[in-house]
Length: 186
Image (cartoon, rainbow, N blue to C red; front, side):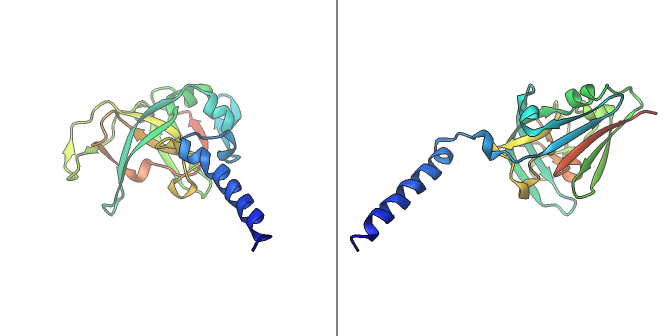
């Protein structure tokens, strides 16, 4: 038993050190996975996850409903405005379309109004359609102050945010595992 005591004490100290960052609410940069985002348009560039996190960020509440009526949220999200990423790809004209692609092959297409948070249906908690408040579309990397988990669509997920936690949007456009944003010119 005396020989086991130092080993147990060492394991306890290691456990406390490992858990302390999560308890303190900090998110070390190492907690974000290696992930690249390709922006394609008039110019093409690849951004790493740290480069994305270094861009100006937007925050708000996201709350979605699946096509079968399952609600997801509300959660607080942080990420980069989709409009800023489209500009980094060379911008988009009024008639252009923005393709959002995921690692698993899922693809969603937005028009320029949607990129700017317009043209989405919004619902209340009872799933009755309501007048849309100001919406913003972001490529989220944080959810509730922590890195967006893979099972929640991370490391990068398209999210529609607002200042009101009770506003629900339809979840089909909430693309998980985003790895490419492409501007298609008309």
